[in-house]
Structures are given as structure tokens and as C-alpha cells.
Amino acid sequence: MTNRRLVILTEGRLDVFSAKTAVSVIRYRREDVVALIDRVNAGKDLESIIGIGQGIPIVSTIAEALHLNPTALLIGIAPPGGMLPPEWRKHITDALKNKLHIISGLHCHLNDDPEFCKLAYDHQREIRDVRKPPGNISLGTGKAKETKTLRILTVGSDCNIGKMVTSLEITSAAKKRGIHACFVATGQTGIMIDGSGIAVDHVISDFISGAAEKLVLDRAHYQLLSIEGQGAIVHPAYSGVTLGLLHGSAPQGLVLCHQPARKTLRHFADFPILPLPYLIELYEKLAQPVHPCKVIGISLNCFGMTDNDALQEIEKTGRETKLPVTDPIKFGVDKFIDRIIPLLP
Figure 1: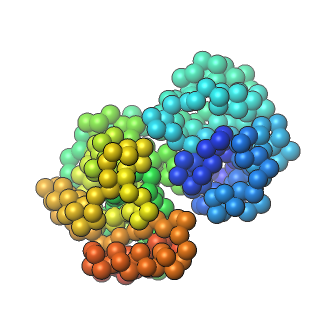
Figure 2: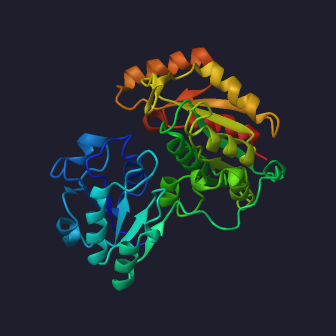
Figure 3: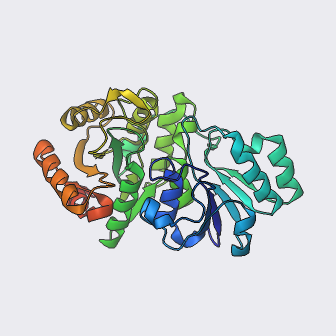
């Protein structure tokens, strides 16, 4: 995690949601990023596309970034299913031939690819498959609820909606208040930012709650664990990982993340986003058998809205849910910290 000089591959998918790995690494590890590779957007101003990253160049090839002395190529996109598009292979082989390490969060492990492995060996480079879980994960036992640390888990009305960002912002704000807080990464992007964690969506389903439990038990000496959520409980593709995290981490509080402009589930247009009061009740009821908890706030992703429009949505959602509401990027998370402090051990 130190002295990294990253070139991030987004290749034609550079927007806030499709390239959420790239966007999040740029937001939280800006000092590590020297360039993006994206032939479609090469030469354009990055900040005008994603709202952050001023001064980071977008180039077409590895060769065009070599004068910036990069040390690694980071795969900045997490496509549905996490497979490697064939057109990305050339960028990876070029990176290895130019002695760059590879950091990948794909479901397909690049270390299992004979061509990449040979190139990495020949050029003495490392391929890091961030989603590869550790081998010592047990079944969940419910022990997380026995720890004294306060566990706050983000959940969502959909996937790819701001759960990681909310958890990171809660951690940062808590530390500024003097709270001994820890961000708990449960996905590949969070691990790339923080340097530790388990990508629970790559864990065998029987062991997801055990992975979440392990993450809590290993960090039980903190006052506050801000646990990154995954998926959504009503999502037909990703509900399993959401429930495993909910039961394994046994949180005392939840923050529900939502994007007001989104009307249907991402990539599943036949499924509408359900009303927030319904989701609040559903998450709390599902948590109840393992450990009772309450939704303590609503995190809105108001990307693309003006601050005035965002404030109107915040006020509207507050009336609807009777809970503290904010957009973490636009207005911070002090409202959540005010609710968290009385819950601290």
C-alpha cells in the first residue's frame, strides 16, 4: 500500500457507476494514481467526467504512461460477473512486459491464467487477485455479537449505490471526533483502498457469515467498526451476500443507502426500487433473529444533482423515514456520528 504509482484501466467504461473501483481509488487514494488507460476517453479532462481527479491524464496505452514511472496496473472496473473482457488482455500483457505489477478485483483470478503467470514470472512481477479469500474461514457462529465494539453496517436499496463510500466517510468522521474507528472492507475496491479485508462475494456461500464474523473478531479491539455492505437484500443476483454480511457481522446499527434518481435495480430494469420504509422494516426484521438492530440513518447518493435539489431530497426522505438523512460526499456524515456516539461502548 506504500509507494504505489498506479495506472488504472477503465477502457471505455469511465463513469461513476461502471468504473466505481477506479473512481473510489481516485477519491480515497488520489496520491497513488498517475494515469488512467481508456482509449475512448483519452485526452479528455477526467474531472469533467467523474467530478474528481483533477490533473490525472487519460491515455490510450501503457506505453503512453511509462514516462510517469508507474509501478502497477490496477483493473478499475468490476463488470457484472467479474469476468475479464478479451480486449483487456493486451493492456495486462503490456503492463507485465513493462515490469508493472497487476492488481485485479475480478472474480476470475489472473493468477490462474498461464500466459499472465509466465509473463509475471519472466519479468519478476506480482499479480494480486484481491478477491481471492483467505483459506481459514469457518462457518458463522454468532460470536460477533459478543464483542464490545460497536458495529455499524451499511445496507442498500440496490447494489452499487454508495455503501462503501458511506462506510469510509463514517470512519473518517469518527476518527476526527476522537473515536477509535476502523473501516472494514468486504469488497475488492475497499481492500484496494484500505489494504486489508475479505471480498465476501467470492466466498463460498456457506461461509459468507463466517467471513464477516472473522472480520469483526479480528478487529474487536476498536470502539467502532464501520462495515462496508454488499449488494441489496431484494436484489435477485446479490441478496445472498447481503444476508450473510448482516448475520455474520451482527451489527447494532444500519445505515441504509439509496439513490433518489434510481427507479429500478441496476442491470435489472424489471425490478423497481422498493419504498424506504418497507426496506427499513425488512432489514431490521431479518437482523432480529441473530442480533436486534435499527436503521440509524439514510445515506443518499445525489450524484448529478445540484446541492439545492439534493437538500430537497434529503428533507423529503427525512419526512418519509423520520431518520437522519445526508449525502456523505456533498454534506458529510456528522448526522450519523451524532447517532453513533451514544451507542459506543
